[in-house]
Image: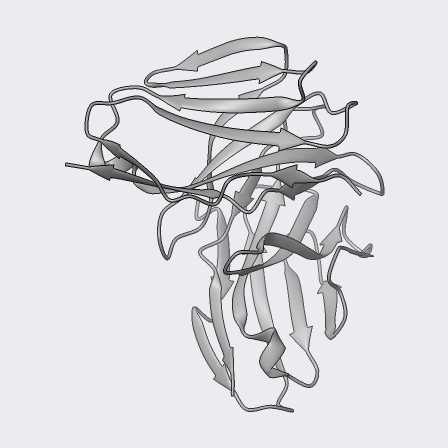
Length: 115
Length: 113
């Protein structure tokens, strides 16, 4: 049981390049999330998915697209990377739909630098 | 938009002391709260969930919720250098297709040996 996995762990892009961050979970969770974490800004939600085939914008969606390929996988795409997208990106999934108490489980993160 | 506020710190305490971390929230209707710990360079991990008013204890950790004053605290007794990390407070947002978490910016705790 690997939990939430993310690839790659590190990436350096040039401005204007594109890339896809991959995320997968093996806990049979319905909900999945993409966050970015910047110094002094905390974790900010980019996009989330309540179930396979559905996605919704979070707090900071501009410049990103997502795909919920199946129940296990949720990818984040940067079509034209900008230096402002330099950040640490975390994928998370959430446990059963129990009111109030379902925690989110986080992947190890992807450290992205855009030059 | 719900807001969660934390003092960024660093909060420095000597080994063996009690560390007190605080979090305030804007939505009076919030009913549950999560505390995550994040070591440098690692991902957040859940250490405490609290729902009702009062205290919840788990080992050396105690979460305290005061809904009237809209704050939640995390106490760490007998602090150890291994407790040095950033502690994130989070509040659920139930709007939309699924529950989301609104995170504070975190408090950096440094336990001095």
